[in-house]
Length: 226
Image 1 (cartoon, one colour):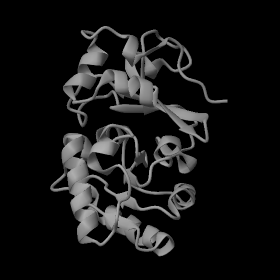
Image 2 (cartoon, one colour; image 1 turned 90 degrees about the vertical axis):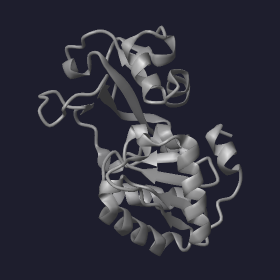
Image 3 (cartoon, one colour; image 1 turned 45 degrees about the vertical axis):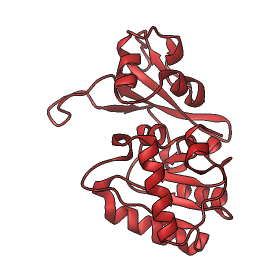
Image 4 (tube, one colour; image 1 turned 120 degrees about the vertical axis):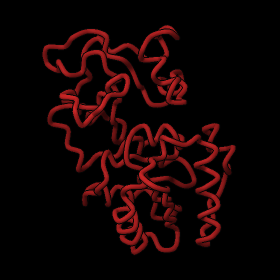
């Protein structure tokens, strides 16, 4: 069965001057929100089973209330093309074909937002779902259809994935009808590079232009997690 690395400390329990807490805050994320809403922690101790997880943010991925894996995010930024250490390290054996980050929480909201990565989910809010990549698998597709058959879904991948963004939108629209909204981001920007208020304002404006009603809560409601 999947398990977290040992020695994971909830992000909310770290002091404000800890490098992991500072990294989250510098990116515009509330460490307490990440910890309480998404279960994000920090691997403080070396783990012989998962040595690459040490000194990284640990981000659990759950489906139907069960842990299916996790991602470990390096704390800080580097020249990733030249760096031998990966930005993200996924739990060995995690089957991402049947995993959508934050799907259990997101499906409880009146409408959802499909994005690529975990930080994109954090930026948009608790109604966002992460593909954990740019492409979509058949298993992920069926999970989205099951969750949003009668509710609107926004597709907002990174700016450098416009072809994938359009293809996924067209595919989902065939099964979800007119309740799918495509939101394109400029350049190679990703949702995590914008504030939550900016993203939600952009989503609502695009939904209005495309004739899709996003019910309940509005920008302020979703931004506050209600």
